[in-house]
Each structure stands twice: as structure tokens, then as C-alpha cells.
Length: 207
Image: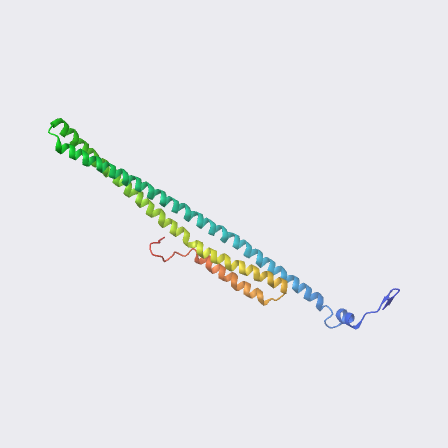
């Protein structure tokens, strides 16, 4: 009990303040605070890395979509050129037929000149169509190559999120061994992050 200027300590209070472990509570508090601080720094680093990985994953996906769209457009251009090629072929056949049916020398010369012109135009159109097809194939390959890192980056982000969750649980429960699990998950995320930029060994995909 207490009265006036005096205060009577119980045995438990006295042991805490003056016993061999009297400052144990304070030391434990400081140690716990330092531990929480380190976990907070660890989590902040993971969040920063996660933001970078997330950006790279989104960029890879957008780039892949861009190149895929380019491949489709070039394929459409090639199809248009082949249709134009067929139309010129039909006109050439008609000019050849007219040349064979007429006996007029002037008309024969005229149709022969048209046949010659259509052949040249067909060659130019064919080259253009083949050029568009080549561009379409190249754009499609770029799309596949750009999309390759996206899967690995998504896996990396998953491990980083698991690590952040484990670190949060570690702080709430004060179970320090969970920080080790968070470290393992973070290491897995870093491995997948690096793996995303290793040249893929996929058929038809080259760097």
C-alpha cells in the first residue's frame, strides 16, 4: 500500500526494477523494437522490388500486345496485296484471251502491251505481299519474345507478395522464425525475377 511520500513495492515490482534481471523488460522492449524496425525495412525493400517487377510485367504484356497487333495488321496488308495480285492476274488473262481472239494488228499490239504491263504489276504486287508477310512473321516473333518474361515476372510477384504477408504476420505474432520463411519466399521471387530475362529456349523464339 502507499501513503504520503512513500510507496511500498511488491516483490514482483522490486524484482523487475532491482533484481539481476531488473532491466530485462527494457532490454526486451528495445530488442523487439529493433526487430520490428528491421522487418519494416525488409518489407519496404520488398515493396519497392515488387513495384519494379509489376511495372516490368505490365510493360512486357503491353509490348507483346503491340507487336501482336502489328503482326495482324501486316497480315491484313499482305492479304490485300494478294487479292490485288489475283485481280491483276484476271485482267492479264482477259488481255491474253483478247489478244488471241483478235486479228487486228493494232489491237494485238495493244493487248500484248497490256499483258506485259499486268505481268510487271503482278511482280511488284507479289514482292509487296511477301514483304508484308515477312513483317507479320517478324512482329509475331517479337510478340512471343516480349511475352516470355511476363509469366516469370508474375511468379516473381507472387513470391514477393507471400514474403510481404509472412513479414506482416511475423510482426503481429512476434514469431521470428517466420521472417526466415519470408526471406525464402523473397529469394524465390528474386530468382524468378532474374530468370525472366534469361534468353528463352523455346522453338521459334530467339534473341
